[in-house]
Length: 335
Image: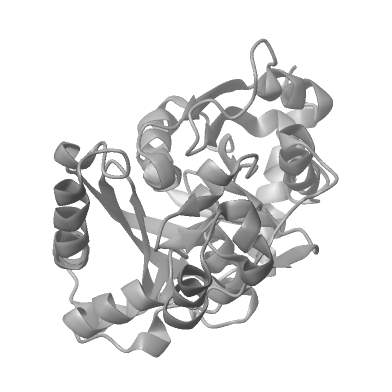
């Protein structure tokens, strides 16, 4: 299975964390912890749009891409952390399918692993792909609104931002090949934010060693060593936690891509994919490099995908697009 292409939308409007203090009910000392210790400076907000518009901004990039035929997208998997992120009886996914010419696709949501749902979707996609034709695709979509202080703040940990991503998954071609995916869920922490203080304390104590264990398990399962991994592409929960993880792994912190932690905060399921797009756009990955997509969802799910970067050669892309359009003209793709 390959991640063939990624699109992202990050609103240009940003709010400094210190300006959110009153809205989030933070004391001055708590704000300083978020800024000075956790490295969170600001978060983006799509202030003029609702959830439909936020997701629509990234879906418009998908359908307008010259390398994508919308009719080749057979499944849409929408990954979100907030279980009820739009009111009944709205049908956001159905409306977006109609608006962007993908009404033929089967659409459903993944949410039970919270912020790890975006990587869990890779596992679901790997299960669905064998039933599809060679040129068919699955589109993973992420993005949420911070419509309440309750969903915008994880106390003493992070501040959530608004952004969206779309990930085109296929059987082969340019992009990144998934070598393996490891997910570990510790259900005893399902109420980590609403349960007793002892549960929260225990979760904080096991967070770093557990995440490091899952990283090692994923790498071992792919037949690699940590020295083989060019980059760790993480979620943006905060800078302090990644310093601890890098130190415990004896892995260079500069090869954990934390550049977006201060700039966009923790954008729910979108972080690893936004970071991967930026690393790819900056040319930081070379052909055959191995890297990790890493995230943690409260509840608690630790998820690590081992990926191998493939060089994107223009002739390969053109060849794939030619075959898709040949099938489209022959009537193989019908709404």
